[in-house]
Amino acid sequence: MSVLTFDVDTLVAEARRKEGVEDLGDARFREPLGVLCEAYDAAPLSEVGRWILRAGLVHSLRTRLRTQEWVRRYPEVLAERVEDPIVVVGMMRSGTTLVQRLLAADPARCAAAGWEVLEAAPPLDADPSDPAPRIERGLAREAQTREHAPELFSIHPMHALEAEEEIVFLADAFLSHVPESGAHVPGYRSWLDAQDLSPAYDHLHLVLQLLQWQKRLRGEPVGRWVLKTPAHLGYLDTLRARFPGLHLVHLHRDPLETIPSGASLNTVLHRLHSDTVDPQRIGREWLERMGWTHDRALDTRERWARDATAPRVTDIAFRSVVADPWPQVARVYDDLGTRLTDEAQTSMRTWLDRRPPDPRRPAYTAEDFGLTPAGIAERFGRDNLFVSTDM
Image 1: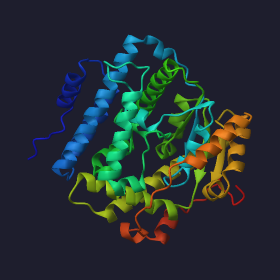
Image 2: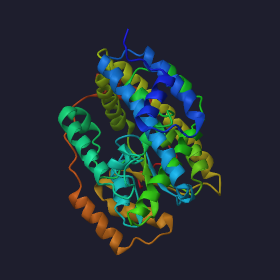
Image 3: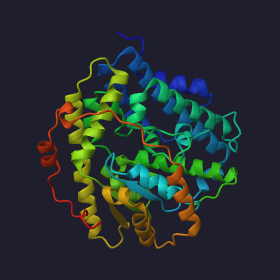
Image 4: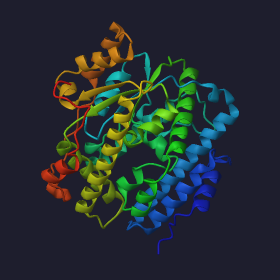
């Protein structure tokens, strides 16, 4: 039996000892953390995998402790108004990263860079207006991942200085699909499907307030946030409840192209944590998860289409934004009712010219993950009312 156990009280005590403070904030995190700990203890993890995942839980708890302490010291953080965000959603490999980073290049917008996602809350003995040490650690983490986990970086590169998705902030509430992406945790997975994710979105809002406050300290302009994670697709109503004025940008791509890519990423993540990995089981579970997500998103979109108060949505086809992003960017700004300024266009073009090149990804087929084109097509056979060939 491993000496590395997943016990909530032990993890909490370790995080508190390392940070020197006690307040973890919203107590609703304890039940999901408990369910997740039980699932990890039952999972076929290697010793290295147990260490990695356990360290991740402690890191999440330490982030919560730091966040609450900064709010205690500076209550004005809670007065920060997170202006109606632009939220980019779509299945993995549907162009969400490109669109988020392109929109975030507008100086009038806000986004969390990779280093901010890794350390949203500064160490408690740090100057919150000086991000240099955290940026340095973020760059070091990027370099380490490139060197020691090149396959992972090739599939899901996380650049310290680029806009990054906020899935980590949801995971810090222990209510997310992150655990099932990297471990066989069927108990947690089925439990999660019946949960209200409001605590996770409340935590996301709090972290955005903290990040926004830090931007003001640094003298940076604070504008409308550009958020992005495929995870939002299954929880659009919860997202709307927390951010009622959001504008949704929904990317669409053929699942025959996106599903095997996600299965490939999850297989790599599982191999980081376990010596017994079944790519075909992972593929089947990923297909079902994305089908579940897709169904929920369409149900919500159909209801929103009949609701005059629902958020505005811009639908974009992957092939269109890859072929020529500018008409699609213009559509987003038109739907926002905002002028696309010369300054914004110049900044976006500069980003496109300088953006990191896409890494070479490993070759794979749907069959490598127990999937077939026919099976994928059948799972996603429901008509998508929001995708057209003219998009």
